[in-house]
Image (tube, rainbow, N blue to C red):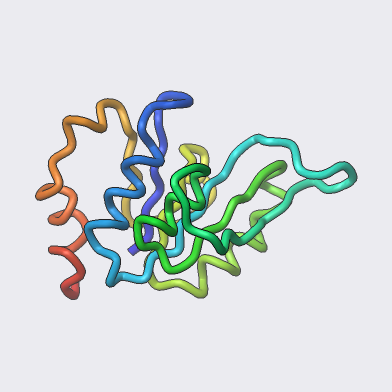
Length: 136
């Protein structure tokens, strides 16, 4: 399953929704990716870094704490890093990318726009995700 999660801006609940979906179906072995405009180190167009430590702060750490198998952060020029990102995603049967613009760049099964995350029912999320990990 391939999912893109976008929102209407910053602090709209995108990461919280991604973590909820991962937490509801950790058996899917999710690869989760955060895409942001944060500047990469000087001289680099982009960086794609794998997070290795789960935690309560930082989006990629939160993905791992929720149960993601792998978590990455792509920052900088998304177009420049697209080939490397696609190679990472190709290694995973199930992935979630947090970035509205990714819907135009990546083939996906679902694109979700987060508007009012507190109104999203976990039962409906499980239905969308295939019944909590059952085969589609």
